[in-house]
Length: 179
Image 1 (cartoon, rainbow, N blue to C red):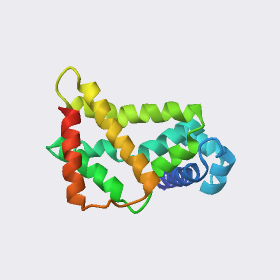
Image 2 (image 1 turned 180 degrees about the vertical axis):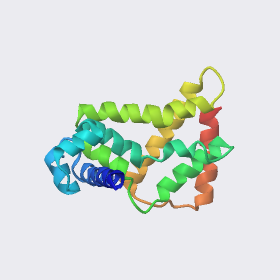
Image 3 (image 1 turned 135 degrees about the vertical axis):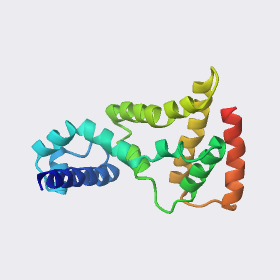
């Protein structure tokens, strides 16, 4: 029972943090706000997450689905193209992007975001690539991936062409980036 209660409390805190950071940004969210939204005291938040910074890092880690993308298919260029096409067509804005946008003024968040991109996208992608310049090629592909999120955020869901055409064109882009 205590384990279930502990996990429930941890989940409530994490859910509240996801919502509050996306709505207000890192600097505007206080520990008191988090506690009130999660129906938990500040000591519990610190116990489960250590600090607001560590909680924010956990929010970023929980919301991103990219690392699993690299395990989804044999043809990396097609897999990445499908991932980006799905992001472009998604009806709902990315919570991670909203969280990062509203938190952009914080230098702490920039460091966390940079580390998250490095650990969740850049490094796993570079490990999948052969050759000495794998990190360079992974960096170029990461630019395309991150740029697609920004594009989707600015222009909303959908594209003027069919998904298949988007995937085909993005596959060509990723083949060029990765080769």
